Image (cartoon, rainbow over all chains, first blue to last red; front, side, top):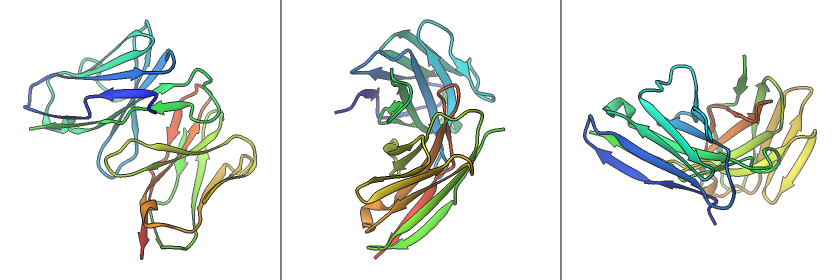
Length: 118
Length: 109
């Protein structure tokens, strides 16, 4: 079964709305989680690395005030897209770093959230 | 800088064999991974190589040469359901996955 749960799987909302996406590790404590964005026909783009109990590390070009990340517990990280606009429409995927860090499946992926801003 | 290269698109015939290549240059190396991703879905893990050589898993095999910064994914007895994007990723010294752009594999009857 799934070891990482991501919710919601699909969101459609009006421009200007803030949207929260949750990522939960079900079978292990994840001190580190990753948030990715994927536009159609492109590869995964790392947005930020979320560390429990500390501020997230954002990749260059990703606005931290636009994409708020909270990793308040060892099993939950949230990404909030604030005042979303149509250009934020994308497929957002979270992953949790396995406690083993290396070896098979070092990152367990959520099923992704398809965000459509009208 | 860090860079992973793989072909953008490949086409193969059902029942045939296809090899998808991946070359990489990264800061540190903690293994190379292949993922399969169907449109609109999250990636699913296929294989992991950290030592040189071939790893076989059913119809799929993955090869690694660390000295050459090279890997390939070999798919045998292709089925229509194998049509997907195949992502090559390298784990760097910070345990982050550096992703290639993916290879879209089209299977024709």
